[in-house]
Amino acid sequence: MVVPQATAQSCPQCGADIRLSGPRCKSCGFWLAAAPARRTGPPTARPLRPTGEARRRLLLVLGIGGFVVMGLVAAGVLLWLRRPAPSRPPPAVAAVLSPPAPRAPAQLEPSLLLAEARRQASAWHRDAVLVSVSVGPLDAGGVATGGKVEIAYAEPSGARISGGAEAGGDRLVLSMSAGALTKTEVHATRGRIAPEPNCVFEDAWEAAQRAGQSTDPGPRMRYFWSDEHGRPIWEVVSRDAQVQRRLDGVTCSILTR
Figure 1 (cartoon, rainbow, N blue to C red):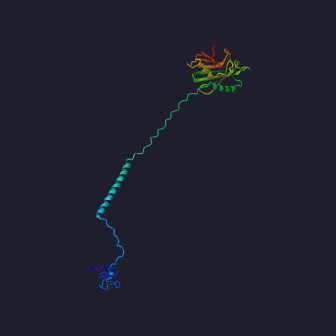
Figure 2: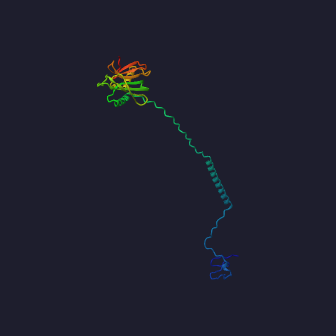
Figure 3: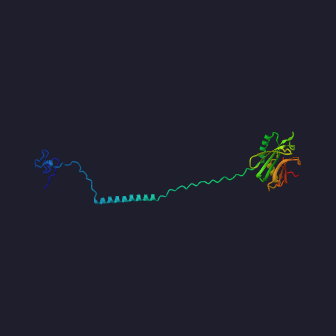
């Protein structure tokens, strides 16, 4: 039996024209209200359920991805555990400060001390005159360590205050060793005025060494007016008071007599 194809204008039971019919087909009496309405649009696509093969592939991919993630997490944990411990700064070592080495005393310079002694003597007496200079012991460089410089000034005894004139008995002795310049007033019986040395100590001692003067065992030098030579002179004297050299106090030349 051939079933007629139903349309919107035909009966789904017999295929007769039902455009002028009521709720029932006039040809066969089919109840038209019970017939499902014909869809005019395209059929709705239903989601396809995964088949067994597709499901297995999906599970395989998810499993592999899970293993990869777990491996990365485990590797990160191992790297974190094996990281080098932070280096600690070395403990601070307290600096050990050694006490400063004691300074060697400054070497005395008689020429500079003579200038200061002259100023002090002028304050002591307006017309103070030089009588003598004594320096020693000496080494090759000048005044040895622990040496002493002693300078004596006096009051003039008369109107004449030039070299060779008689000096007064009141004296001002200025001395310096390792400390400050000290002043002492003394009284002497006699002495003669010696002009300020034109041949200063440093030049006189250098000239004496050039002439063969030995520095052992620490000689001394003294400056004064010599009646024998009629001029101021420098004398190099040994420790046992033996005169070893005489030098002109003006020219620094060696005196032979």
